[in-house]
Image (cartoon, rainbow, N blue to C red; front, side, top):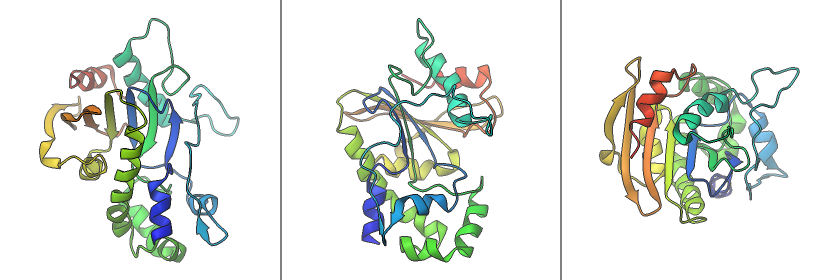
Length: 235
């Protein structure tokens, strides 16, 4: 258990971009890797802490013959990023000089797009229980958050620049709040998307964070109206 939590406290679940970037974008977890998440980071009977982000420059224009949707989440976020920054020349999100950084709330990837499916996968997969020390997907989610909080605290200390942090997944709002060491009671409902999904925010919760905005997960690309509604929530 201790070894796994040390892994969770490391840079696991972090993609890259500019670690000192002004804009941080936080997903829920890596997607669709399934058992590769364990196979990649558990070797020789121990978890391998990630000492630096997996990528330092994410090229969202990259294409793969077998996967035309590579970086599909990042491409959706790029629309929001372009509206926020309004660069004089187009700089894609998470690329060199973009002033943006990509990370995930949880350290491991799981196949499935909802918690019920992931819960079922966990229940059927004994190695998840044995290697993490958590008997259920729910206890894993709750149990790793203190370690993720320490991970994010360490990341914030690497720069004194104010951070604007966007978190994606309203259903995970309490986890996001705890991971960034903010009481959920401090968050306020600050807007609604075009389909009436809620947007929450907390402003100046610490000297290193200017604002944390929790947005709906972009299952579909954000419309221009949605992007405008989110950017209006910023100070």
